[in-house]
Image 1 (cartoon, helix red, strand yellow):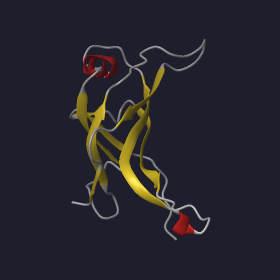
Image 2: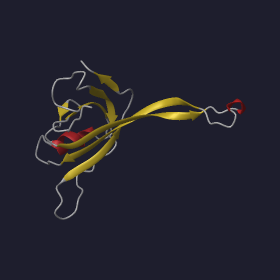
Image 3: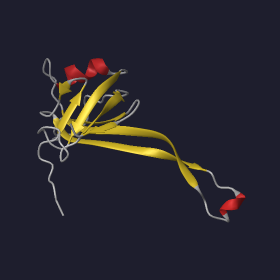
Length: 136
């Protein structure tokens, strides 16, 4: 069974490659379950898939310098922008698919932490529209 250790994830938000700031990136997608149980179900619940949704979760090391992370993300607050995430920074392939779509920058927490903590930002962004998986 193949195994993989994430060493060089790729993350782009609004065409800004953010690898140098990113500690973690995860894309999660799901589909609503809709109850379609009837008396013909003989006491068993029946469900079908409804609307799909997704979320891009990120953890960044903060950088307030001009043109760096905070300067990139702050102006995006409240906008829908494109994203791309891959397990590795290498070329897109069958063993390194890319996941793309759009996300709503619905929040930004520029300063968090306690004494002695690294300056980091953990944020989740809901997807807007389809999330696409591609291998080319």
